Structures are given as structure tokens and as C-alpha cells.
Image (cartoon, rainbow, N blue to C red; front, side, top):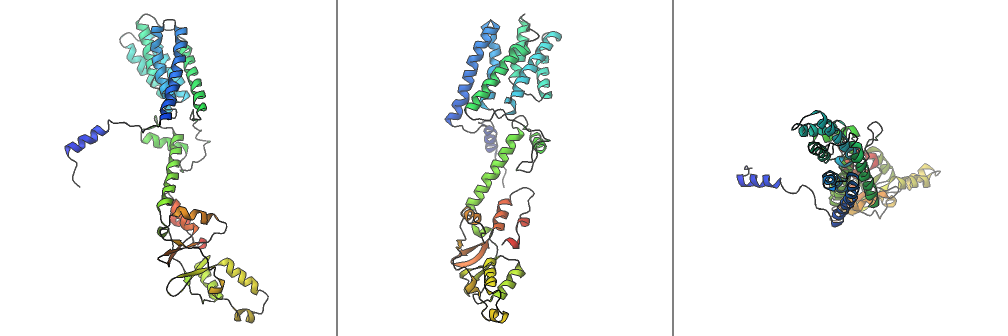
Length: 381
């Protein structure tokens, strides 16, 4: 394959600067927008009342506005969780207070932001809008209005607590999950993907996505992908691709030979076909047991003299399916109690059988570390 030309490579480069988020329906756009608007209206009133000088107080509102966008628009993000939002703001404000107290201008700004980021990362409370609060503290100090040592707790901590409380009510009103509760690794059950919380966290670290996706969200996404893949598999896979060869017998085969054939192949059912391969019926174990029970107590010579043949024992209405029938159409058949393998026809001729083991093997063939052959057994066919 020829290498792409310069124009094509340049086009790919420009494509990386396009939208990285999927499209959202109108309700998904309006809900966070209204939530942010309500939160900022209340924050503006509160800061104006607490700060006195509304012009300077609006600098603090800008940091809270960025927090509100995260909390209301992407509540699943680790950056928007209550711990990250509250502790990120408080730690950043504390770092800025310390920097303005001990580091001279013009190095106080860099020291405040470096301390804020280091503190947030150390406490696993990364919250980018908190950098704005740290900068606000530095600017206030440079303007000759140093903040009070308790400023990180009040008003910053109090305002963030109010913002988080409003977000909890807002998301609950619209039945959204917030906050994302991360179970403790020691107590968390092994999820459907087979990966525990520690493995999910390591995977996110390996792909450098630990600040964008929570392990709990990754597990839900993995489960949803697996479910969608199973639905697609069932809807697009025809019966012919998973069927196993049918064991056929002639309509004249006596019962003793039918029993011997089942025992030798460890089978539950035999297909009865004529010389041209056309399906006539199915003989299963229950029909053989019924015939044996009917002859129980009779003299063996009398019973064997009238030994039934396959044509008498078979079910003449086996309900075969076409070879191109999707697997989804077979689910109801196999959900029935005591469901037997289903004969598969192609052009009116018997070409195979589909049993529960075949269906289970098909569904689990894409599971990591699962051996499809282990799910198939002649005893279940």
C-alpha cells in the first residue's frame, strides 16, 4: 500500500483539531446550560453580599463558573466529583495564601499555581477551575488587599459546598448519576468484564485517561459494549455459522440401535432422514424412555418382536429452521423448558443442528480469555 501523500497527511493533521465530543440532543444541551445559569445567578448574589465590592468579587465568580460548567455539563468526569471540586478549590486557595505570604512578587503567581496543582494531584482532587481561585488570591495580594487566612474555607469552601449541593439536587431532579461513587477496591465485586477496580484503574493509567474517565464509568461502558456486541452478533449471525453436523438415522432403524447410537455419541437427539437427506423427524431420549417404559414387564421375546423403529418413535413435527435464520430468532426456542437441538435446513435438506451449547459458544466466543470449545459438549447436543 502506497504511503499517503503530503495533502492527505495534512488533512489528517487538521482533522485532529475538529470536535472531539459527540453530538448531544437538545435536552442534553439545555439541562446543563440552565443548571449553570441558575448556579451562577445564586453565586453572584452570594458573592456580592459577602465580598462587598462586586467588581472584585466577580473575579471569584469566574472560578466558580468554570467549576459549574464541569459539575453540570460533565458530571461523570473525575474532575467534576465533589471531592475534586471542593478539595481542589480549598487546597488551591491555601497554596495561594501561603505563596503570597512567603514568596515575593513576581514569583508568587508561579509558586501559587505550582503549589495548587501539586496539592490537587497529591490529594487526587484535580479540579482545573481551582487555578483561577489561586490566581484571584495572588491578584488581591498584589493589589494591596490580601485575603484572610480563613479565605480558603470561607467563602471559597462554603461557596463550593453550596454549588455541589445545588448540583446534587439538580442531577437528582433529572435522574442523573452524581456523584460517581467509586467502590473500595477491597470490597468491590468482580465486574462482568472480569477486571476488578484495581485493573480498571491501571488500564486508565496506561492509556493516560485517569483524569477523564472514572473506573466505574469504564466498567459500565465495557458492559454496554459487550451487550451491544452480543445483540449485533445475534441479529447478524445466521444459524449455519454455528451449527454442528447432524447425526442421522434411517426410518427403519430399530430402537436398540438408536439407543446404541445415542450412547456411543453421547447424544440427546437423532435426526431421522430419508435416503435423499430430507428430514422426517427427531428421536430424543424422552421418546425412547417412554417406549421402554411401555414395554416394561412384558416378556423380552414379545417386546423385542414388536420393537419399534425410528419412524414410530420420532417426532414428525420437529420445527426446523432455515440456514440463514438469525440467531436472535432462536432465543425463544431455547428458552423453552427441555428445548432440544433445532434442525437446520438448506434447500429442504438437513445440513446440521443447532443446540444450546452452540449458541452459548457463539455468545462467549468474544469474551477475553474464554475458550469457546469448553462451552460445547456432546452431552448437551
